[in-house]
Image (cartoon, rainbow, N blue to C red):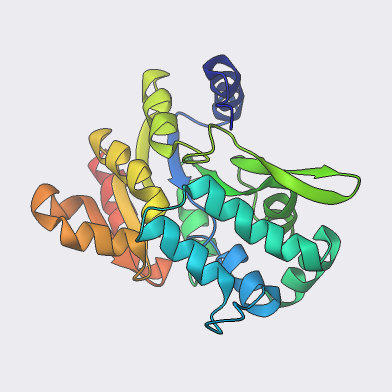
Length: 253
């Protein structure tokens, strides 16, 4: 799939950052701010493999995260296609509004950032069409970049990626550009393999990293502990446990 022209994504990202303060904190959304939308929806509505009895989303997830036989973009498209074959976007959003949950402590954490003039910014491989609805539903104001669902005659055909099909969004590139433009990267939060680039470039920029729950990012950090300063990251399941790190960072500045 054709890669987005650099001038296009750079201008889009510049416009997002233009509405921020001079200090930013980057968040993945799924599994980081709230329950992973694709996982939750596929567990309820997604198809099962006729041979193994396993949910198909787990096969796609393993192909991307373990076997490396699918790109991030391809596995995301497969999961959305399975869902949107059975349900409309409206039906999925209605179900989410009744059942979707935030990660514990996130509202207080976001308030702490805002109180210290740090803008929370979402960098998510989810789809705008669903993420925007859920940000509004959860009463979270956060500038964001996502991928987008391409619909033709009411049917899902593909994802339009912010960067490219391989990664969807190259999160590390967005951190680097923020630094180039003079923004202070206070930190980031993520949960999965797709957030490793976000982590790596945030640390290079001098920010701290929050790995949410024991998923791919926590595993990566634990397995590569010898490569990173342990003072640069922490693993939490409740953002209340990250409040002290932000207060220390703010006090240190």
